[in-house]
Each structure stands twice: as structure tokens, then as C-alpha cells.
Length: 317
Image 1 (spheres, rainbow, N blue to C red):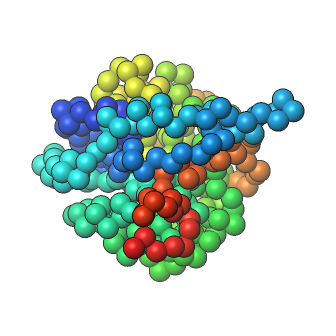
Image 2 (tube, rainbow, N blue to C red):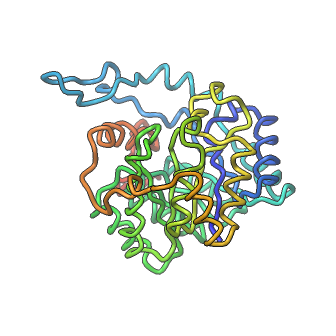
Image 3 (cartoon, one colour):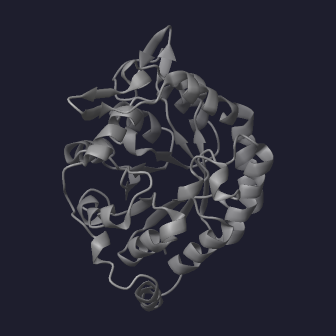
């Protein structure tokens, strides 16, 4: 059966009461993992080109995402060390497995010291081989998103993790992702590197519901990650691409249905889903490249006044 990851992202607003409600709701809905993000606002990096963005000859070269407003947005949503321990205990009490995404190598020793066996790697760090090496030493399994990652980088990640347990998750780093841009055939490409392949869904819930995730499961996804919220869709930045408890329960039930039942549900709900298949290999779109430019290196380790990016093979000591 497909493993379902309920991605909390920052939909909790840094409020432990909301996190507790999310854990309970995700467990009741039938998700396998409840996932937070081990982000610290202090690991956010200042990069001058994103202060105003870059446009050359009428062509956008870098998005505008100034440092200070982003820092102020993220700081209240930090999940501190004590909250990490509490989160794991709450998940265990609710009967759901805890999971997190690590965004800076400097956080690996602490996060890796806690009693969870798997970890998530964001798309923009699929090619951060030093980070992957750090994580594989501390976790039994890695879930790795591959959005906005070049084919040769995916191969290098697989080579780095040879002999270790990991899953590659296809995703498209357009927020939200239209059904016509899903390129679910990409999962076929990923299967040459790992027997466990899945999909991380960023489609617009109000428009597309669970269609993308359901099609991915029908096509054989072993893992599906879906943003999740217990708040109204307009209450958080990621709300529009996040399912609510009822929708998460529908997705979990679909994942546990027989293949024939899944075919009938998709036929009734979607009909012809050929537009979602796309290409197994393709050039990254302009939107994906712009997002890659910003998000890859958004967080880094800060050691003795120096910034060390996750892909840099440098000591943090």
C-alpha cells in the first residue's frame, strides 16, 4: 500500500496547540507519517539578488524575495529543540510516525539524535551530497523530493546513497502545479535509481482536490506526500495547496483500495488523465529554474561568521 505523508509545513503557525490538533487529525485520517520542518529562521541566508529581483532585457532572472520580511515571517514559526521532542512524543501517543525535513547541515546532529528512523530531504537539496551523507549516517531511510533537480544530480544522489534505503519523490516546483504540468511519467525515470518511488503533490486543492495524488497512486506511487492543514485555506501561505482532514482521509482510503477500485474512482473523478502524464525527462521550465535559484541555498549553516551551503563539502567544526 502507498505510504501517505501529511506535510504540516508552516500551516501550524508555530502554535503547539495547532500542531497537536494536526497530529490527531492526520492520525485519524489514516496518514502514515506526520511531518514537520526543522527550519530555523536564523539559518535563512541573505542574498543580494533577491532583495529587488533581477530583470534583464524584460526577462526575469531572479525572483524578488527580500530577506527581512521573510525572516520576520518565519521566526514565529520556528519549531525549537524542545518542540521537536514533544512532537515525537505526541505522534507516538497518537499512533502516527513522526517525520521532519532538515534544511541545514548544522541541524543534522540534533535532529539525528532523536528517536525517529526516517527523514525527508527537500527537492532543492536532492543534489546536496554532503547533506545526504550526513543524514544517511543517522537515519535508516531517506525520503528525497526531486523537483527542480537535473537528471545527473539525481543519479549522483542515488550513487551517494547506494546500499542505503531511500525513496525518490517526483514533484514539480511550481506552486500551485497545474494538472497539465504534473509530468507523472517522471516516476518511471526515477525507478531506475530506487525501488521506492513516489510523488509530492503541490496542486491547488480548491480546483483539483486529490486528483493528482490519486492518479500518482494509480500509476504505482509507493509514497505520496501531501500538504495538510486544519485551518481555513486562506489562513496560511501553504493553505491553498493543503488538504483538510476529510480530504486527507479520502486520500488515505483511496491508497488502501484495490487497484480495480482505484481505476473506477479515477475514471469517475478525472476521466482521461493523459494530460497529467507529460514527459519522463524534460528541460526544467523557466518557473522551475527561478524557484531553484531562490530555494536552493535559502537556508545554510552559519559557522564562525561563514555561510556553508548544504552542497559544499566543508567541515562545520
